[in-house]
Length: 118
Ligand SMILES: [Zn+2]
Image (tube, rainbow, N blue to C red; front, side, top):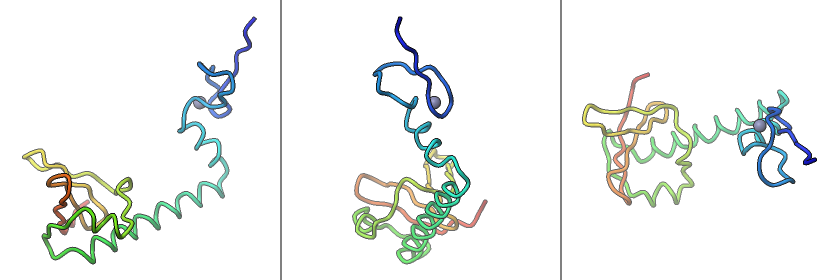
C-alpha cells in the first residue's frame, strides 16, 4: 500500500512527489516562521522594506511626477510590497505605499503621486 504523507504545517495529505514535505510555499513559510521570534523578524523586515520604498518614492516625488521604472530598480525599490491599492473611477490602479502612490503608465514609466488617505 502506498504511504500517505501529510503537510508538516497544515496536515493536508500531500499529492505528487514523494519527497514533498509541504503543500506549497505558503505552508513552507508558515512552518519556518512558526515561532513568535521568527514572525517578529519577518514583520521587522517587511516594515523596513516598506519604509525604504516610501523614502525612495518621497525622494522622487514632486506632487505628481513621471519617473522611469529603471530609476526605482536602480534604487532597489521592492515592487512586491505595498500598503494598499487604490482604484480610480477610470479603473486606474495605484499601488499605495503609506502617503505615496504610483501606477505604471507603460512598461518603462511610472506616475508617482502624493496620496494622503486611508
Ligand atoms: Zn499545508
